[in-house]
Length: 464
Image (cartoon, rainbow, N blue to C red; front, side, top):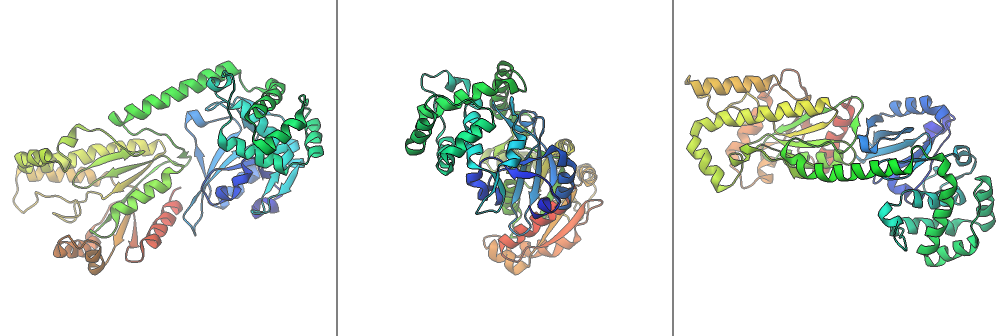
């Protein structure tokens, strides 16, 4: 905020200001309105602060609205700046209405007491909220005899109106050239005291009808587009698991990355991967690829279907199949991982982030997801396995995190595992080498939250 103010940029947090502290802590979006004349300077400052520009999926992309993702090094939280260069609102997935009051916003500012951020005066914010309520209301709700406003939106409106002064509210209506409905102040009083649904809807609809001339596109076509995306997302959310990961979130303009965590048992690979995916998926399109004994892909908490699941699972049936296949299974396993890595590369080129839990390598045999059939005896099966691992070698991720932990700590964390096997894995971790991937060594001995924060910082610094 200080950098923006020092540069003379006109900006404010323009809506949802009752929850502005949640926005600043990364729990929700920051709704920033910026003077379009200052766009270039604004973006230059964000880049210096290591914010990264993101591209929304087509159903969340609107003209004059952009997305920037920032990172707080101390907390590890992601910050999403939903940056507006116009006052945009309206039907879900479309935002069909542009309100013409940019100058009014910048001339009617106050400083939020808790955050110190510039925000609009409550009279302006409440009047715009009335319009937003009806503009965003679904058709199924509009045609009801008694349309309803969501509890959250009504509480926001009541809170704003309780801050308003009556004369200033009337004056703001005049400044915005909004005609006042009959019994307006009585209605405001009723909403303040009783959170009256009927009066809220009446006022919202009355004000909204006065700004129809500012449609970005017709309401009918907007409605059709909104329903199309609503059902498109419902269908794809069910069927994508049978094909490939679905991109639901934003992608970085600089492109995607494939990242992998490797280490001994007890280093925290899987737990860290789970939390990193959860952290990134808050706003960015991220997918989890498990590259261990039972490889699978999980996208938005749904495991993708694969015919090879009959082999790569912990079920009794799978165990029997693997026993029947014998050594041939160790030719099927790396091929499955090659298929997964080809998919990972494809979607990362589209801007998605891939987190690999483990990664196959051919430096250390019989552990760390390395080859199993290399026992010094040449055979067709061992040669085939080696050729598959050489192919994997050419498909390295962009970043490898080596989680280094002492055998003693690893054994404490995995007391049920073979102590000698854990010791060998810890010792052999240094022998893992990669051709082109950026290898980042992480001390995994400190408390978990410190290790996680360190990895988050490394990831953000390398997303370019």
